[in-house]
Length: 237
Ligand SMILES: [Zn+2]
Ligand SMILES: [Zn+2]
Image 1 (spheres, rainbow, N blue to C red):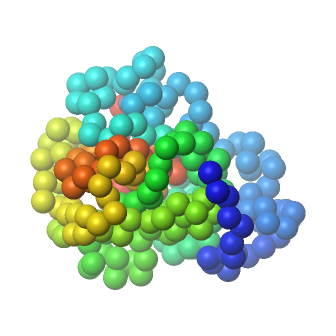
Image 2: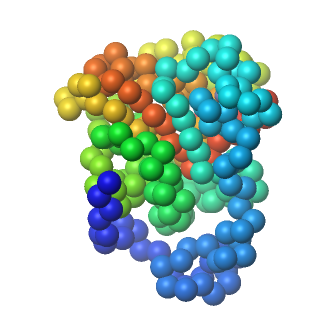
């Protein structure tokens, strides 16, 4: 895989830890102490959705409803400082895209055959309101460092009405018609890596994977900064 060292996409307040403010070496975003205590998602995870799970192999939800993506992985469990980093990114501290991408980049080895990056789109209205799409920022960071091109043919055409109480099946139904592949050029037979900030139930990722596959993609993998553990589902979008 090509690792291109390109210019930084965002100006980053250098020399202090993004989490505790302690002094760090140049180009480090998080100090060694904070790094040590991050909730890494590298043990006891479902081999399909990648969420922390008490079950070996597939978690209960993936056993009941196999997702349309091939498999998903996340750098962190959505809790403590990982949750804080994602919330700060969504609240407008865009340099957290770079901080989080530092942890996602080494994970690209889990997807050695990925040819194309994609990101979970927002509706035009929602993106305008926030001023940016955090999934796109993460995706662009990964593209800048890996050299993998970004697929821009996905759109979110209507807001999904999701409720905390809904199971994955109902969530899936509510997502129907929310996303669209508006331009399928360059997608045929490709292995796509879909990037997002958080995987909650995986219903969104599964719906988009379904659309990408129907539009010609051969495989769809998912990489998120964090994922919500099995049976601790909360709402974020
Ligand atoms: Zn720190
Ligand atoms: Zn699972």
